Length: 165
Image (cartoon, rainbow, N blue to C red; front, top):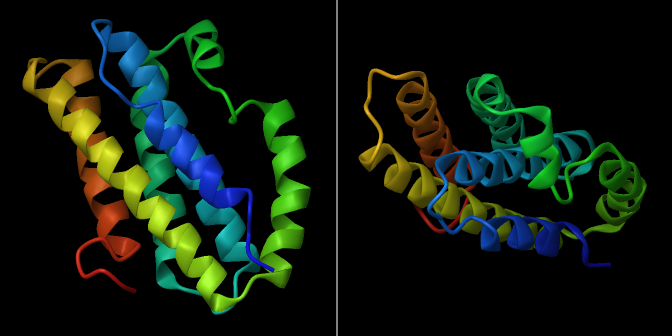
């Protein structure tokens, strides 16, 4: 059985990353992307066969990005732009994902990885764009640098640099 929910979940997070005129909204959307990528990485780490280093690395990178973003964003802003990453959303996704991953073929996991590569590239593009218009020495500038680096590493870990694991 092919995982039907995790790839679209990542693709929806990637589609929401277009930079807008409001930097804080863009940061909140980027946070959503890292939260989604971290959740899927943790699920893959726990359930996917074969296990891959990318899953552990992805979880760690996303936690690092979230730690950089969270001090800059209010809870209201995070909730307003956190579709799919709120507790109620996660509570629905996790049991379905466990079942899907338990039944997934290696090819199904590869399709999830392809969606992760797309999300990581969109995150890198967003934080590169935001970093170009933000002073590097500010809290926002430092967070954008951390997030851009995390997105680049996430992209590479899932095979974006070579087209495969």
